[in-house]
Image (cartoon, rainbow, N blue to C red; front, side):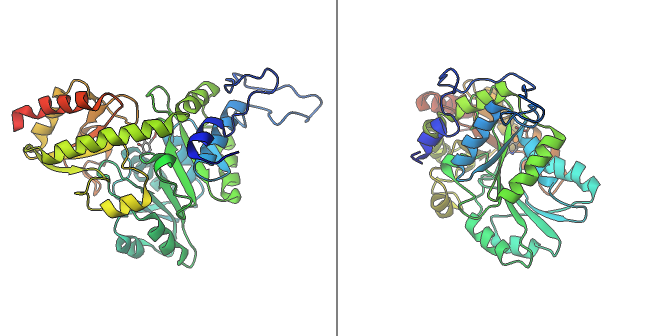
Length: 382
Ligand SMILES: *Cc1c(COP(=O)(O)O)cnc(C)c1O
């Protein structure tokens, strides 16, 4: 099969169904499968273990990340949970200091109770990563662009540092913000890529899902055992919805990015705005690195108000097209205050987010309408 991204998104794992010719992957809404004789089946026994709609999704997502090994989960957090279960009590995890709030909560409140140790560094600073690695570090977990600060980490640089260790830790990249269309961490040296498919991959804010894509078959097999043993699997309807969203990922990401760039440009010049953060905006501290590692800047923009937290809250409540809500990556534009919404669980920790930061998930509405909405909301602070 031709291996262009757009073509794989529509065809990988999605041949027409053999008995009827159905062009779209059917929703195999079944828990079990008939056996011709004892133990003789067609590759499926029970839908926790495997389901054909899920197989199509797993095959397609793996192909898009340049691998053959994908496993779908019931949510992004279920995917994170599965990866951490590869570790043993006493192991140390070095994580980015602005990882997704739910990831931090799972590490800090749950896995720390089972003997795993965590420390947090700014992974965009390679020296901090180098000095953060201990003898018992078995896994490095990071996001790039990070959430909500949109910092960029040099993936190849990190992979090189880890390879030089006596016992190289796994490099795991949560690629939810970039999507495989913008950035393919396995090619840059990651061992595993995790996504919340709830976000850009699903793309329509109508399904919760996650996936882990592994570079090596051995890791994939261990994760596959865990997927079946713990059973946090997505249902066939959810897999179908993610597959449907995936088909348009490339065109959506291009438009998300062009809209987001225009908005970052507007905010950067606005007198009420202290600082705007967008990876492909020349003002971003990691602009050159972002351009070398990503196809475009994605759809997320963060900014701070000169007048601080109360102004930020007011702006988030004033927009009409940008809906005040958690989550991101859908066709509709969203606005939120990370410190008291998505990242509330980091309050009081070293990962705490400044209260005046606003995060935008820039959608696919007409850019002029989005700009006008922000202009009106910012009017009072000129
Ligand atoms: C949303 C999100 C998650 C968690 O995914 P769910 O599908 O909500 O469980 C993990 N990482 C990032 C970067 C996210 O945005």
